[in-house]
Image 1 (cartoon, rainbow, N blue to C red):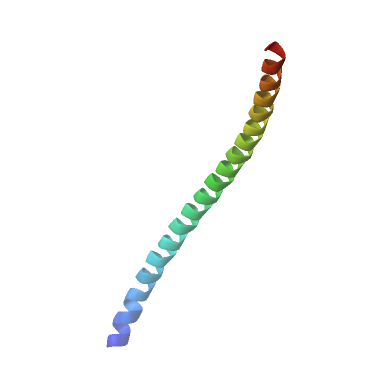
Image 2 (image 1 turned 120 degrees about the vertical axis):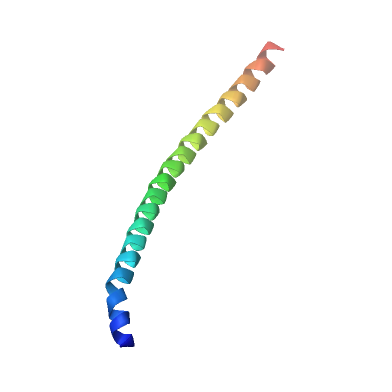
Length: 67
């Protein structure tokens, strides 16, 4: 009789686990997409920093010409 109880609950347990796995998969996909976006933002910021650093050096060079 104990085996009947286990098999009765087995499909419900499996459904719960499948739903949980699906939810975790969606969350993982969302985090992966967000990570890609953040990495792209980081690359853009690195480019901007490089450009602004060059601009500061150019401006410093021009300041010395004025003095």
